[in-house]
Length: 124
Image (cartoon, rainbow, N blue to C red):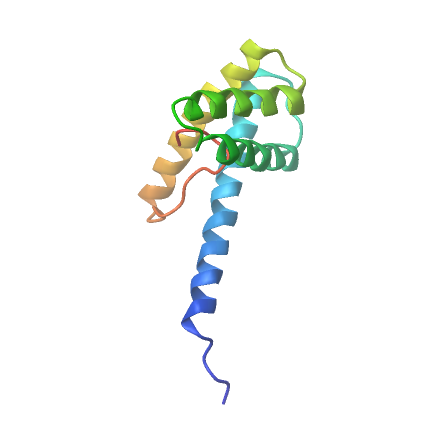
């Protein structure tokens, strides 16, 4: 008879699953936004962009007083770099990605999956 896994391993698996689902949701939102605002690439490109944007946000958000502004500028800069857009269109991608993330998260909540977020999409 196999021994049960320690509860710490289950917690780690749950956290990894929540991270993966949140990243995929962020990728869906970013992919939808770039499809509306710009020439879009494949979904994997959007997921990697969401991950890089989340990392940029995490690094700069803690800066006192200006952290939120610096993080938002860095996130838009990541989108600008990855999709080769201007600042205005990259900002529009951010707004559209936020709106798409809200819709996707609301749909997930309706089917009983409410413990995820949209990693890589600020404010979602």
